[in-house]
Image 1 (cartoon, helix red, strand yellow):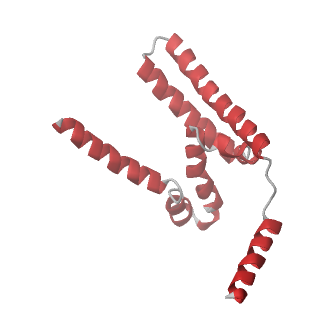
Image 2: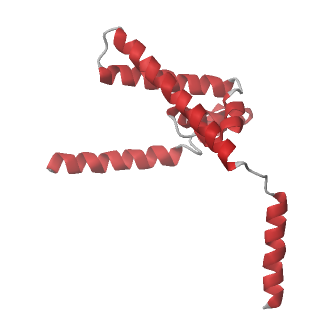
Image 3: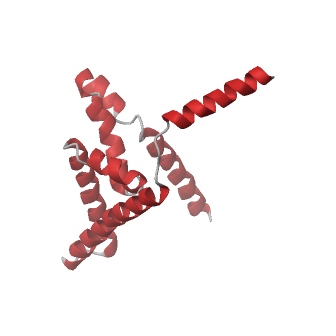
Length: 147
């Protein structure tokens, strides 16, 4: 029993030694202001589009499309990953993080070809989100139809 406990202790020490040190307050502030800035940019785009006479729903849809495009563009230019290293979860939460999760595997596996590389790997991370989102929307639609 002591041998197992010693192995556990050694493992915990090894994990502690190799894990990067994290400043929780600094990381939280970075995530908050970067994620908030992304959301504020989205709201600014929505307000600008609404000023052209679009309804709130139309402006929100257009802003979403623009933010996804910007996330894809910044990922392709290798800028989004740098922002992600700085801000951590602040870049994952907004819709641009979803765009980044779709494009990153596709870019990484481009050398394997467009079908088996880009096409197959594009949904590696975001695929479950799309599947469960679609299933959930169908279930909610059915419930809404009958209630």
